[in-house]
Image (cartoon, rainbow, N blue to C red; front, side, top):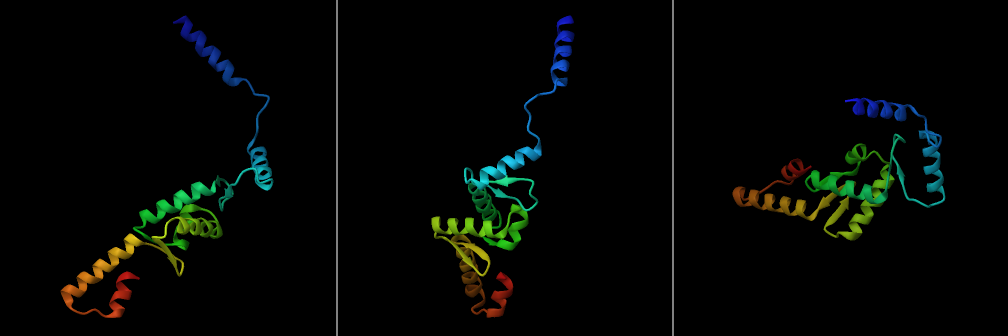
Length: 143
């Protein structure tokens, strides 16, 4: 039991010691800014300035958001979740579209081929059942 008390006392003493070489948040931020300015690292600052993300991580998050949205996504709707400037999101989306031709960007919205196939199937089913379909019904249903 004495050994345990000794170890606890030693741990307490070590935890109370101050370190000599320590970076505060301000110094870390200045260091990151210098690294970004010298183009030694590629980081994107979040809108609130409290975090940094890599372009690859932003791309992964954007891909995930497209999937979660079911294949249809407005860029302006996803910006608050990603918390970065819309221009960064647009650049990452351009890279995604280059890599994956099944993803399209039209009038500020992202569409996957799977989403478009689902819409086509649904329209076909409606036409098979009803025999006709008005354009305004389609627009209101899929807007």
